[in-house]
Length: 119
Image (cartoon, rainbow, N blue to C red; front, side, top):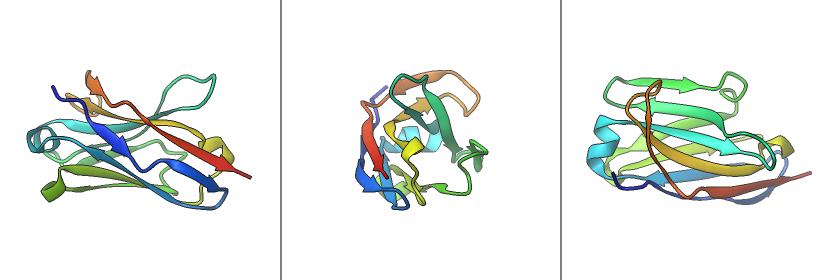
């Protein structure tokens, strides 16, 4: 299983936006679930959102769904995480992961991309 590759992190002020990208191979995007997690300093890894294109399903963390949007581009084998209205609590490392299903076992993780939101 090839590891996904994240990009798009950076430093923004509160209220700003970022779009993260997760590149996987075409088979993985069409067959498995792709999930975004995040980990704040000193905290446990938290699930943000998961998409399963084969089933047409998406699962969001309820506390984030009003500000975060997941989308995909099959031609680029990429899953995007659009984050708007960023808050300082959104600071952390954002990871892309491949899962058997959105509620299933994790297969592999990316290296992560840092998001820093300043007040």
